[in-house]
Image (cartoon, rainbow, N blue to C red; front, side):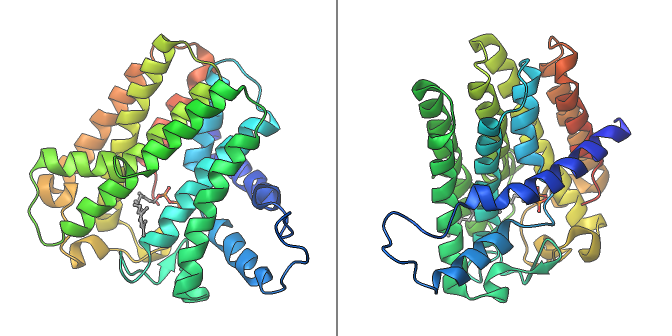
Length: 303
Ligand code: GRG
């Protein structure tokens, strides 16, 4: 992994931070004759939930895929990338709720329902998800490209994607899952959105069906790799570096790769998945180097 991927990500993190007001849009809407001042708090909570602390891997993947296809980043692809991150932030806000993972910390600060209220956190999640789709529809791509992006993201977030994976996760506390079941849960819960991040970049970049297939293989391997590394970090990381409670999965009796394969087995699996991801785009030119570096980053990350 080149050192520059970390620098590139750091640069993108600060760029993303500055772009948040544009992504959220103004409080005023065509529906409100005058803006109710209470909406200010909702917007504060929305901004809080997508502000600093995130690695921004998913939107960066969208941009890197678009660039791998030979395009220069535009405001429109940045809006699509923002949509991907908003969908991710929604999932984190809802995942932290008492009825889900019940976590008080996220990205090194109190989780949304702790900083505001449970009702606000539910609405923030719903609001971020809706805004994600609005961002895609207002970006400057063809109608067909936007339909493909909306379909891809909706499928990734829905019952056959992240929500389905989360449901299996919630039902699996204290259950010993076989590896194949653990894998399909993670492919849905975490993998589906990472896959969508890449596929949205591919649709925006008008990838041919052959390139789309290679990028999809890359994304599926990377998505699963990301969650295997997450399981490893839940064991070896610290709450400080993770920005959330370490050891939570084990505490709650959740099935994980480390529990199933041991720490070394899980690390080995992550490496194999990373290698498969990179192999899937071996025919791509140098413009895909950022995607290769990102795969290395995912497996070597410390938080
Ligand atoms: C619909 C009520 C309701 C709930 C749905 C959507 C959902 C609950 C749960 C999503 C599942 C989830 C949160 C998976 C975790 C994926 C994961 C590994 C998150 C951490 O991602 P990072 O490391 O985080 O990229 P940062 O903070 O860097 O963005």
